[in-house]
Length: 237
Image (cartoon, rainbow, N blue to C red):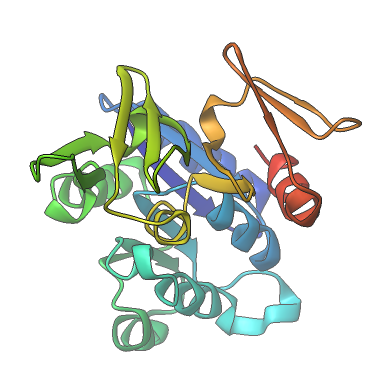
């Protein structure tokens, strides 16, 4: 499955692009948003494989809204090399996109479904969109690699161990601290409590009154200091 974020200040354009992407043979989930600020929230709440950005967003950002967003994306370590595709009606802006954000491709308006699909063919076959894995050592020094998407939540165990609960069972490691894991699994995961990092996709319900997350049969608390940040992300999931 590929997660793609479409950002364009024209909602109709977003919807048209979403239809084109989700009709492809690959399993694509396309999210759409129309402002720079909302796009930043989306980036914080989910791990994206490709960004499809309009060079010019809303008027308050002027002609540089798309470049601002591209630079913001590049400032996030896991997105340093994630493909960015710019859509623009101003060819003169392409050089700035290439030099400032290292965009992967660009598409000139007006475009066709064929233009979009040809560009996606190149991007999705690039090694830059390979599935993410999480690596750690077991107690015998062997390296374990598991898909990030298989992780449900992580919490401390005994003797400074971390317990990694996945769809296939539980692993233990002393390779990382919670702070290190929080940085490695930053996008698509959230530290909701000093003792818990959760996969946002695995949450089935949030009890706001009692600050509790429901993940399968597990009930996980949301710490007071994490509540506001979590609820900002939860609103857009």
